[in-house]
Image 1 (cartoon, each protein chain N blue to C red):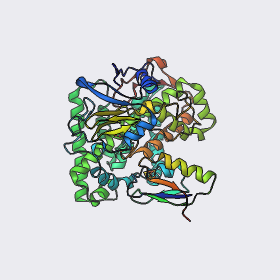
Image 2 (cartoon, rainbow over the protein chains, first blue to last red):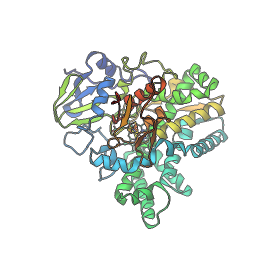
Image 3 (tube, rainbow over the protein chains, first blue to last red):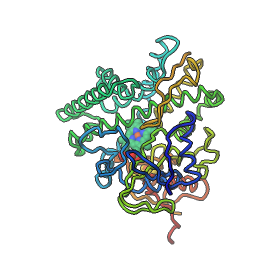
Image 4 (cartoon, rainbow over the protein chains, first blue to last red):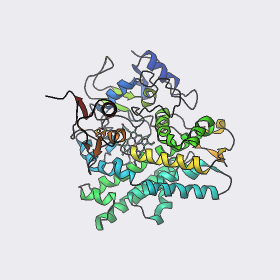
Length: 389
Length: 67
Ligand code: HEM
Ligand code: SF4
């Protein structure tokens, strides 16, 4: 069935657009208006979202004519990157790099991530009695982590961080963003070239040894930054804002820090920030939830709405740190499920633990209502989060 | 019950290892290794079932043991 509207307006900062939840109740697989007078199939139930994302015949290849790529998103490189490839091309690249992101390998990064977080909080606390948490904590932590993952030498961290912050700077001009992107790509290209000359024991050298071309690898390095920086930063800010807005939840973590991994998982589900991760193009006639989606149609698997599906998550709108539901789709589902998810979980855990332990007087500098939340777009989050302690 | 993995479709998410590190591991390439192919009824089976449901590439299968 076709409905008249597809509003992406949020009613409040905590919940998916009301229209998407209504579709889930009334018409879980339905064609809705999309950009440029086209239509798209909105998929809103958890099971159906998994069906779509789990089947690569719903293509991620943004170079296919008619692919519903989000307006304003342009590929970081002329070369396709992992996230916009289909199997078997995707499989080959994913298999080549996924050994770097195993639970065990990421676990080995914990002590270093703890250090990074402690140092970042030291700097924030030394700066006075108030700060914008986004700038002081949320953005620097994942930026330094990715810089180290890629082997960026310490003396270049500032350059790396400044340029990656530019993508998410609310009032940056398009020219500034393009310039920052160019600078970073050039910088990562330089790192790759240096590893070609002199291989070391790092991810870039290992990828070269495994057969990645320097161009491909520059694209991968850039993708890791793009995919892993703003996402993680937004989650850090949203987690802290939620804890400050709901003191009973903060108290639970103070009383029992062992709840933190469960809290991270629940808040990942609750916010499901990667709002356009589920855009696909049907390359065959494919059935979803009893409806046949014809080849050539655009499809939008709405992970955020799926993660509020009451058939899968009882009382879905309640934040419950003991829910223990790991079958959410905050990191997507299927072949493209987030490569960095174990790293993201670890960063979030370490940050929340440190914030709860080290800044007992943390509060809003102003109130929850003063926070400017991002419009519905590539990644949900906040622009600034003024806090005091 | 018999727990098997299709190592050629695994995408190295590590979700199974998260679910039960005693039952699953990943090799150096990130591909799943089943450490406990015959989960016993109760907790082990419950966690194996959860891993099967969560696996993003549907690479894990629980089946009746063949005689
Ligand atoms: C809370 C933080 C994060 C969230 C919510 C998140 C979410 C997602 C989602 C939903 C996808 C699937 C997109 C699709 O189906 O097209 C994805 C893919 C990806 N993510 Fe993340 N991500 C996060 C952090 C990270 C980090 C820290 C890294 C790496 C350092 C990373 C690297 C990637 C990569 C490389 C892909 C593409 C995988 C593929 O196409 O095979 N992400 N992420
Ligand atoms: S959960 Fe599935 S895809 Fe992820 S490592 Fe285990 S078997 Fe592989």
